Amino acid sequence: MSDCILTYSKIKFYPLEPVIEDIKIEDIAHALSLMTRANGHCRHFYSVAQHSLNCYKEAKARGYSDRVQLGCLLHDASESYISDLTRPVKRNLPEYVAIESKLQAMIYDRFGLGDLSEKELGQIDDIDDTLLHYELEALMDYQVFDQPPHKSAEYVFHIEDHVKVEREYISAFQCITGLKKKYCCVGIDGCKGKWIAVCLTESGFEVEKYPNIGEICERYPHADTLLIDIPIGLAESREELRPDHLVKKELGKKGFSIFETPCRQAIYSEDKHTARERNILILGKSLSEQSLGISKAIKQVDEFLQQNPGWKNKLAESHPELCFARLNRNQPILENKRTKEGEQKRLEVLRRYYPEARHVVDKYLADVPYRKKTDDVIDALCLAATGMIGYKNGFQTIPENPMMDKSGLRMQMVCPII
Image 1 (tube, rainbow, N blue to C red):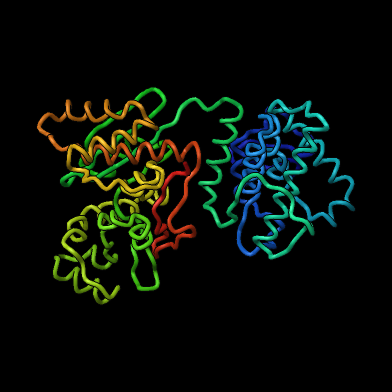
Image 2 (cartoon, rainbow, N blue to C red):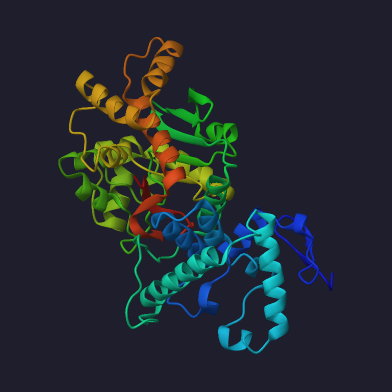
């Protein structure tokens, strides 16, 4: 393999004599999500894929053509095959520059941009420089230009999980090129020892009850998003902070719907008394009956994730009341979800984003005729719709930079960018 590299998709790629058919967007997205900007000289890890996505978003915010948006997404794609060199070194290696130029031109050609005009290339370069300025300002406290360049969007340059960035990169590519045909977004809510899962796709929806979380994940192994209303990421000391208090504060009068999450030691206790004692010892606070009431469900999900590490941080925690507030123009829905008024208000909000919302509830009631309550299925539907919106627009997390618990699970709640 002296003349080739093995790509993520197991293709033998020859950088000096590239074959255009061997260029795969999956390889580009994966590699760039693991490559750092500025040769690693940043305050923290910030990938080339994040930079490329921000360039794409800036082009979109400026109203530039799809061609320029795609060009911004792909402008550093050659680095996925030949890496990058710092500018002082690169300018002294004309052979490298020739290899890079040839490969980048082939990548553009591969994805229909072989005829980019000087004006379009200029727009791409301008956005590249603009993002460079704001990246170094945020990550290195350094100003590239004396006069900050104009930007049409706001950016956060924090650490992102590379898998999330990789997916967002591919999603952006598919959206621009029109290849994005289907999504699969699952929302999960607990219901008397079982789980209700709502799955939304472009072709319709599914709603069903499951005995355990493992069966849902087995049913939807390739889902784009899986959001669940149960705590994920458990503190084992006072230094580890979950998002509960931040979400309570954001929800204001609706903050009572957020229960205190037990520590991991309490979750694995044999009885309520021991659980309370351990929580007081570890976190300095007791546990309410509501918190103890969801402990078995928390334990089931935590055990599943510990035994199936591939699902860690793919199955993500959210909260219906937080998501309803975001979908309702950042206004919490104060009506009780178990009343007719509360049900109607929540379905009214959901119909703005998913017009078939009422049909999901009706299908559930038809399949489970003895069920009169609708709040659980509406909550699951809210999380599925949240995943659908977030898959298209991106997600925010609370907190912005979540901590990891000792098992590698993020202590966060996710909500959509509207």
